[in-house]
Image (tube, rainbow, N blue to C red):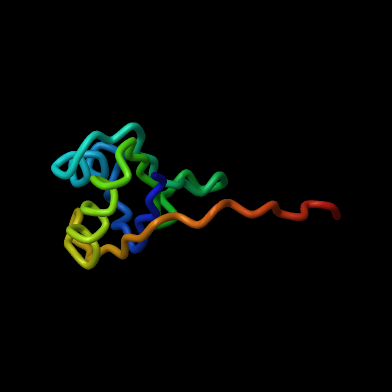
Length: 87
């Protein structure tokens, strides 16, 4: 299951994100989204967990908890929508 993590501290890196979720099950990937122009965190990221039950438990446990100094918002990620880039 793909999990959205919002309101991340700009100091939070992928290791911090992975550690927070590994306490609840196997994490297959953790990604902090970076701004392509500045190289700075955009304040959100995604975590992939292979077991949906563990992922749901992690969402419940971590939502509104502190990661790297900020209270994060955690929920199941919505499917990515196609962006129209024709200009």
